[in-house]
Amino acid sequence: MTSTCLITGGSGGIARALAATLRAQGWRVARAGRSLDRLDPADDDVLIEADVATEAGASKAVAEATAAFGAVPGAVVNAAGAILLAGITRTSEAHYRDCLAANLDTAFFTAKAYVAALQQVQKEGGSGAGRLLMFSSVAAGIGVGNHAAIAMAKGAIEALVRSLAADHSAMGLRVNAIAPGLMATPLTAKLVANEASKKAISAQYPLGRHGEAEDAAALAAFLLGPGGDWINGQIIALDGGFTAVRPMVKVAG
Image (cartoon, rainbow, N blue to C red; front, side):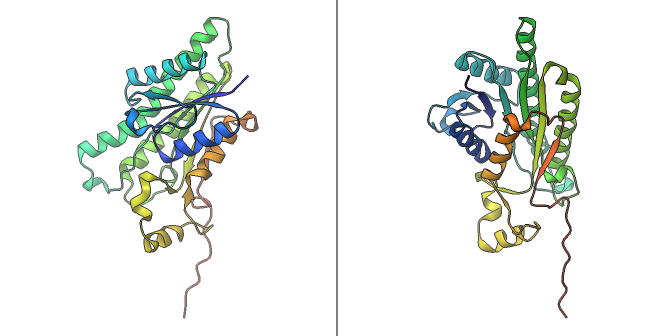
């Protein structure tokens, strides 16, 4: 039986990389986003127009993916999100609300819709098993300058992952999150737009480079597949050692 996955935030760099990785492994993929115009067709992906920052939009995404696959998706990945780099006094109320909607609301309502769909299957005598994957950030685990709102949103996602795992593991739902460092995607293109900025950012990571969308896709595919069958309620760092390692700094002179 072919594995199926719904990916929200489907026009983003990580979502596209993950979709390509899963397709290569034989999965059927649905990608959901707020605008079909931004969901460029790729192979036979199911494309769904839905704003998963709302309860109705998230329910629509899960329902349309279910209809396309003929069953509730075996996995759901909330790859929706946005970056807000600003200290708290430079964060307007509108920017704050937008940041929480793009990151935290999408995670909450996508999870709610997916869990409800699995519970309905279970009520009808089927399996409630599934895989739910979210994205946090290194900024949720350690203090990083100019990340007040985004760090708060991602920290809440990590708490949500643990809570969902506590509530729904017994039905066979595995819930995890990846906490990446800076990944080179269209969303972060301005941050790595020239060699000087790319070099400065890469120097912050012990392995000497920033992340790529394919790094996140490879780890996500592992967690969604059989290799991740006994991984649950975890926040897994994908950051080249950023949150765990402090290399010795050599001072000249």
